[in-house]
Image 1 (cartoon, helix red, strand yellow):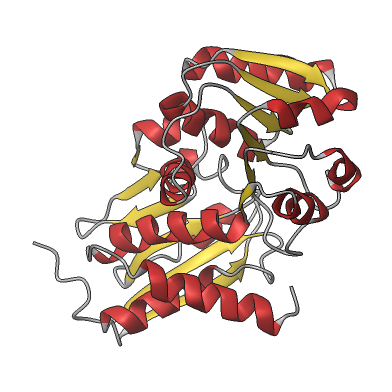
Image 2 (cartoon, rainbow, N blue to C red):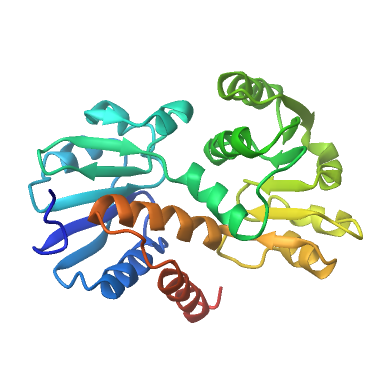
Length: 281
């Protein structure tokens, strides 16, 4: 049986850039709430080239790592095992360093997205739309594979991206239809819309939000609210933001790394909200 939580342990988030990450705020809040006084959680600027070297420094004091871009795929060859969830999208955002020295990768973005939607009362959707086609979009498709009974339309900027999204759909068992970004306002007819694009990409669409929109999940958290999220909320639609996703995926990371469950969702969310307020986001 693990003795995690008794001794001093280390965890951290890796990525590049990483200075903006809220993960230390969330994980440290969890440790404080759980009484894990010997635990620390830091952030390290690590790119793909430096990742193997960083892994070489890990010793028995390390409990786990959170990974952000551009490391979610680069880390896979360095692991002893990855979960089926992570394998389904070829992306790892969580590494647990087990007591017997193994490095196990998982993806908590997918169940985190599902948990965030469930918290807002969205457990099923007859159809959905995804804005964008990057790594987060593939995680969105994996989440939708579990809750969406009908087609998912992905709005993308190139045929190459469209082909990529259709490929992910085939792999994940989702009926993916693709449409040009120029028609992205049509996405708002769907009962569930997941925006996975970078800051500013959907600003021009804010004026096209209909009078009675469904649910919007905009994965950004800084700046917040985005113009799209503000317009959506102003028209009475339900809105989830990037902090919802960040908190729910971090809850799962804390539980895996510490062996303590349930992780303190409310305390972690409050800490994240306070941090965003302090930065003016």
